Structures are given as C-alpha cells and as structure tokens.
Image (cartoon, rainbow, N blue to C red):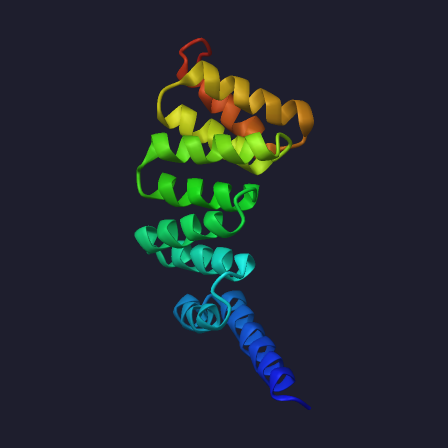
Length: 166
C-alpha cells in the first residue's frame, strides 16, 4: 500500500466520522473534522458546502456565509450552495441578500422547488405579497402536493386582507 493510499483511507475514515457526528447532531465535532479535511482538500466543493451547512446548524451565521461564498468560487453554478447561502442570509436577517441568493439558485435550476419556497417566504417577509403568491403558485404548479407551499400561499393570501379568517 502506498502512502497516497494510506492518506486516502485516513481521509475517508475522517469523512465517515464527520458524517456520523452530523447524523448524531454533534455539529462542533463535525465542524472540527471538516475543517481538518479542508486543510487537506481546500477546493473540494462538497466539503466546503457541508462545512457551511454545519456552521449554519450551529448558528454560526457569519462563518456559514463566508464558507458558502467560498464554495461559489470553487463551483459557481451549484444551485444548492446558493440556496444554502440564502438560508444563512435569511437566518441572519439579511432578507434582500437572501432573496438574491434564492433567485440565483432558481436561475441555475428553475425547477428547484425548495429554493422557490424559500424565495416565497422571503418575499412574504419583505411584504411583497403578490410576488410571494406568484412564487408559491409556481411551486404548486410543479408539485401540487407540496404542503409547505400550499400552507404558505394560504397564509400569504390571508395576509393580503382579501381572505377572511374562519
């Protein structure tokens, strides 16, 4: 076995351990391992993305945003990363920037319903209710069983004042 193979085996062992920590909601331990792995593979987009998500789970929003923005420099056409950036920005109250991130995710993948739902939620938070309704309608057109979109369009329609509470 070459040194390279031993290094790869050790890398995969650490990665598996980090995933087990995530599965067990031990995010601090997972973050430590992902940070170590990124020293070895600094431009590995999946590692970058996952570390950003771990930071987001920990509530380390600035670190999450920074890490996820780094992912974009590595793999700029990944809609999942833009959605994750949107989630971190949304959680930090930076709604206009979150909206831009969700819009970018949907520009890359127009069928990305999770990003569309989150975009609708941000539009609702920004009190741009007609746009939120239109966005939720797009989701429902694609996925009529999407309970989140169905619920949120109902709330948004109610908030327009055009629907009365039961």
